[in-house]
Image 1: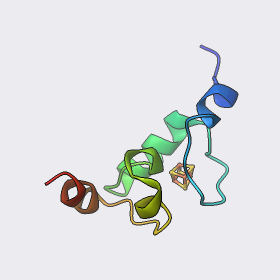
Image 2 (image 1 turned 120 degrees about the horizontal axis):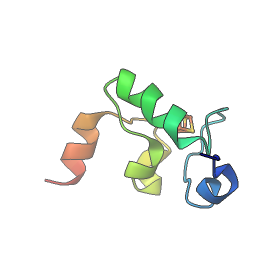
Image 3 (image 1 turned 90 degrees about the horizontal axis):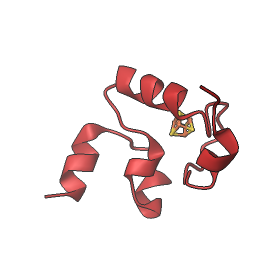
Length: 62
Ligand code: SF4
């Protein structure tokens, strides 16, 4: 399967300088390994804090 990086980047709200941007499989694997979620699970104001914890995600949806 061909990576749709350019297409993915149109939906990416991540502001952190990172080589995984647009390569969603690597992005998810990385954050999952840290017990986190990728940037696109958070609204922009939370994304820019770089707190990608599951606890923060759950707090947003209480
Ligand atoms: S969400 Fe994390 S892994 Fe994904 S592009 Fe942003 S900083 Fe990189």
